[in-house]
Length: 437
Image (cartoon, rainbow, N blue to C red; front, side, top):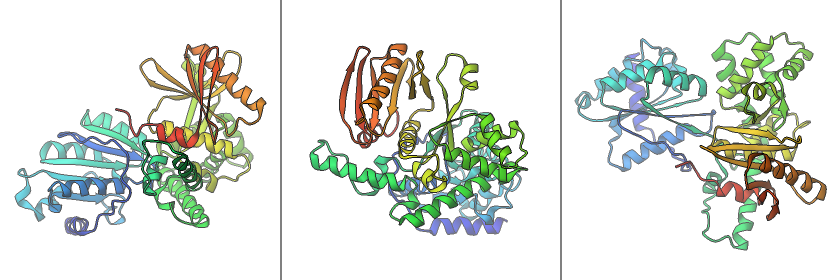
């Protein structure tokens, strides 16, 4: 194994760096702390690592001072907690003069692939002169292991597929200081491309047929590599059918009982507790997200139906049956992911008189934001319904502003509770910050 590791280390140092489109992701690096990036498969975590390596090289760090291994590489499958210790030994056998004298930048991709990795990283940071960077595809496992083993020695960030702003960067477009008629038209046209492709970097610029095949490959990879293989699931077909059912219900409400009933109708015998585990594992893999009802009572919030969203609206189009999902659902899903990049505490809201608002976002201590999503307000009845829900929620919560995201419309609606800003989705996405300060 030692000789294999030496070869892989040298191969990675000599390989060209594919840096792609710069990611708008805040990942701080501090001495004594590991920099950790977690997110869904194929969202660009390896490219992000390459961008950091390129930045180090531009800053004068020799390539020999960079140790990079992708632990999902099948050649590293024999690695376990006992043999992980051979990684630094292999490196320092190649560069013995660097030990304890020079900082070595260690990049480990898909770290969750090796059980027991957390104690190895903790030991590496304590005993060697290393700056560590990690990526992984499991939110729960990484967060739990970092919290229990690394004891505040890590800075964790999340990565999603390209935001609309990053997609514009892929097109070579810069946000203007003034929104002229021409620039607004360019942004609207770019949104149509983003609407069709979504944000996974690999599908950008390919034809529709290829994009669908790639998305479906992602779906299968997430199911079998991140869920079925990792958790040794005894009902793999039930997991796949549950995932498809939830994707079909993107931006809609579901309950565990309804999901269980669907699986039982298909002949599966998975118990209710297992179905609850499936949903939690989907979230763990950054594949699906559940949104609870906003309520001061956690019990009421948990017992009410939850809403489900996918990490990428175009993935929904490629994987779902198309029976239940419509363009309004996809628009809502797109807005959810844009909000989720910035904030974890997102709920849906039901007013005292029974109206529903798509999102209430806890943006900080005492700071809340109401966001409603509607394709078009051209129908007076629909416009009245959507604004009535927002106005009622504003009154309930004592808020004086709310946002209504549409495909095209722009206007300000004054109401007794305050002001509702109607904004087209392209502008809503571009006006969100890249990250929170």
